[in-house]
Length: 623
Image 1 (cartoon, rainbow, N blue to C red):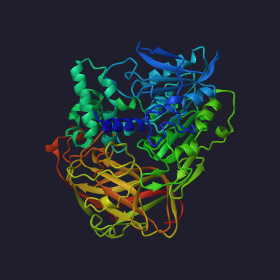
Image 2 (cartoon, rainbow, N blue to C red):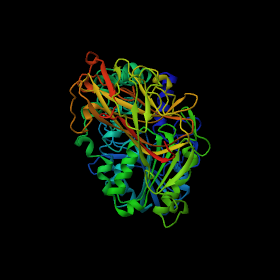
Image 3 (cartoon, rainbow, N blue to C red):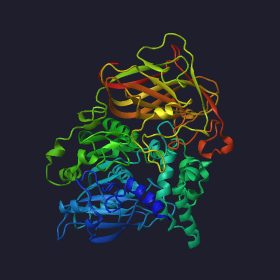
């Protein structure tokens, strides 16, 4: 493996949640958010002991224990990681937590690194029971007071949530940040049924080498498999993203069989429901500090969990649930970055500046007899209003917006001219020609910024969309220049009346802020696979040429469109390689081969009988 390839893999692993002690990006270890400073590898203490902790089924998990020197019992923090306990640490840092008087338990999850478990490692599904058993083991140790908190970001945020819904009696509080799992429509699929292909393949390509060591194959075969993973990292477009069918990504299939299971379970079935956080939220009985980012790949579940807590959780949980949302991507969270892609948000916008030091205060407050004024005064919701670049507080989410419809209008040329398509407050009262374009899965619209975590692709976050808006397969609808600022906070809902020559196809959309100089910066996005237009559980193909009403959730954001700016909606049929390509034939996309690809003639209607529109959550200003 070349040095550059090694660095590419280390950097990506690092950005996905390998904390203090791993390679640094820009001098700051990912995972150091809430600490007020990075814990250098040289400052990481040695564990007092490493224990193989037995789970209920007899599998033993490698567990490092760090605690203050001398005898005594201490409130305990549990952190469970798939990235290797020797190179991963909780957001508090280990030494600062120990010096504050906490015992810290860092554990390799089942099937990873020094822990036992099958070579057929599958994320998510054992993390709840294993988390419960680990928490109760820690609470029973003589060095623990019996009060346990759990925390983590990305995958480790997921292990935190999945343990919490098991309701272990010794768990007192949790702090999940940018978790990579909530439900079917997060880790594997998007809320409209599109496969999060690029994010998944990038993660698997960079995280599967450890699994190779567990395979019962000759050493020569293991070496070949490692070389194959290296090739996949180096050539992820040709050998991963563009591979057809997706079930034939050979470097992945032998090492991680669950890839095919994910592809097979493309509907929201019991495979996913058994580990759904929103569906099990009533089992959670502890205070929650939930942190996410407006450009995080997994932000969609934040609001779903928030809503589930407010509607189904115990009253004490509702009263002690707090959410913080900042202008961060999955890759900038935990750093001091204030530039998110192409936009600079300024001093105080980074996750380090916004919430530094809060983690230990949070657990001091809930695991000990201490009272933290900082925690006691936390608002229900603290969020960053982009555009105005300031932090705001609210008693609920979203903060009581006025739902405002903007109707799509055009002379039928929204794909040919950025000036033809408009967004109007009034519904069209006359027949208008539909806007038409051809979607070709062999030439998809490239992912440009947004909520992605991709190897060898455009950086996530904010990116100028004007380049792709010039494509003939992208429809563009804009308001006139605004007379004054307009603020939005919450989720937008797009209703499209469409037809297609295909029995199944995709429609994707972006909410965009157009600056006076023409720069078009993405704010939020969404999409739908038309077979899932009515249900994620019971897909149904379309009659080609029939007009269908589609609903697309444009994920939550908080943004102010300034005076002189325009609000824009981009509509197309692909966002590749973030999402997989729809072949337009009715075949299941994951099993479609090159011969299955065909073009689709798409139409978007906007008239009195078919009023396509976007409903945006306005909190200030007038349209």
